[in-house]
Length: 209
Image (tube, helix red, strand yellow):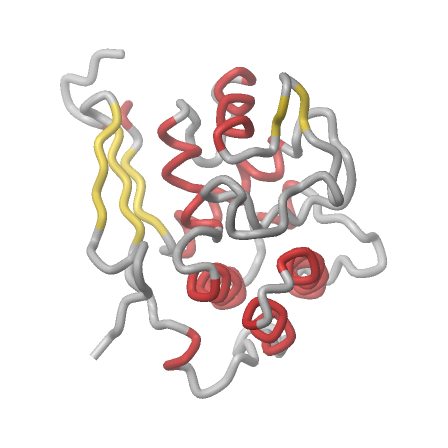
């Protein structure tokens, strides 16, 4: 039987924002139930990330996440991932990263923990709707302070007292925009890979903005 990661995915969670925009975070197998943390899609071993998170080495886990995402997109030499490459991150790998972060943070950190906050603040997967909406998202999860994006990586908060969804944040360096185009592409990849389900409000009959 499929076991759902706790506590965030203990139930199938469907939220409605402004009465029209629906999404849910889908249940997945936890890493403990997987026979191996080697990706069948890319051959990458995610055991180092599991060990960092198990030891609550949050900064190191964030760095490991970045390294593994570069490997999964064959961008180690470049050291950064373009918006187009984000769309091609292997689904197994993305789900495993998210599962590990949620499991070892008690559901506090992870991409699918960030996703509902992203939507709630007026954003939409795969499309930059409004710069202010993305700024509000960054403020909610602690990536912006005093009206400015914090400088990656040492000005992030690497403990469980950080805002919900604060980690992971694997952007390579300080970006005045907070990496909004890449992150918006990542949210679409979450939808495409089945980590979350999302209903575009524009496609709901009789929708009125």
